[in-house]
Length: 237
Length: 309
Image (tube, rainbow over all chains, first blue to last red; front, side, top):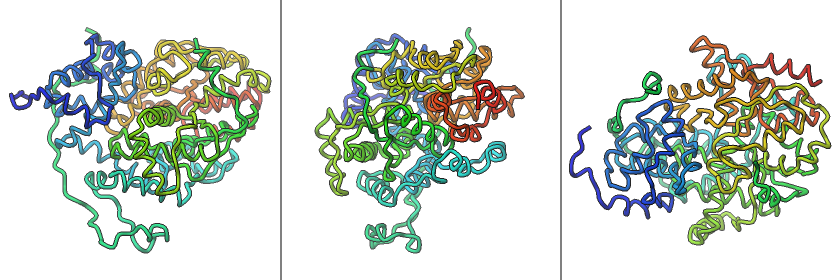
């Protein structure tokens, strides 16, 4: 993708810092030593991913290159870069905030959309992010019913979170803007009046809300940092 | 070499708030059962709460939740422990980093703490920041003298490899009890319980889950896990010990997927440190819940035959 003059933003870093809730700072301290890239598990399998270059582009203001890249979405979030960084730059937080910035520009929604269920169907509904649901037939055949194993291990057949706990995280979600954010991703399932408990009925708004707000158009992302990865490209040369 | 000054700071409480993890509860119940039961044997009574929800780290870092929702969710869970005046014990590296680091962030940022408390006050809770978060592996290292006293099933002749996981040592490089590059405390625990430590080249490599990559970028994830498993298989341990249920699920389940996709044959059982300690402390086999494991079950049965059921 060709860069254009308007894609550069000299003040990007300075304006991004306060928005990023203190998670993006000290990038100007980067020595460009490349230790982060050297130990990076993502860079090991896809050589075009390079934390060092992303930090450089942040400080220089090469905004569009970072935000429109595929590489931004290849981070493993392992914090290995932070653990080796001589200047203590917490790069995973950068990626986290960058991804939000990229979503703001219309990139990467298709990836996030796949993960929506964890928040909507599991975290906010049951209070537990990973459910007992299995989609792998081999695992289903071999393990069978997990609640049976739980009982054998001396645990209750199912782990549940109390209704009060669930109501509280839903309240946090509403107050902190998470619900609105998830509506943007593709519509939070509305509680319908037949299944709703008293506590939920109390919170219920009088105005009915549409199940989907807007349709976000996602832009195409590019391999902005070189040859796309893959096993054959990852061999040492 | 563990940082002994950090270890000395870990208290030896009578009770501790046991923070339940989503993967440990719903996929590998043995971790939860062994975690609580082994702590009980070691003289620390685990206290659980139904009101405790997930840490919310996954949905936050998967960018599904707005980042502003993460702080109050962490504060709410920690306030449950504070109500009981207890420290918190977690079994998952992800929970540990998320609760610990975001707790620190709030404790050192009065503005954020104030706004979080404004939200929590509406539901009758308050976050004070008095509950310290400890990983269960830290607790075991702190209680290692008690462990050696209580070993009923010495792991004699069992070859064990370790995998520490990224978010404990890497993400919390100043709060973890060991060095991020050359950790040894799990090896010490294994030695203590009579096992044989098997070194392998890719010990410090990530398990390959890549947080969301196993869902969004499956090729990258499987590629990386295969590198790790190749190295593990070269060393040929009887079991691979992890301290994070998410690494556990990746390393255990991906073996089967790789066997299916690529015609290879990985059969290394993966165990959580809580299960290993539970095994050494002589918990009944049903409580170890190996029935929930996908890979290397035969080898696991073989190990059980050797150490005694």
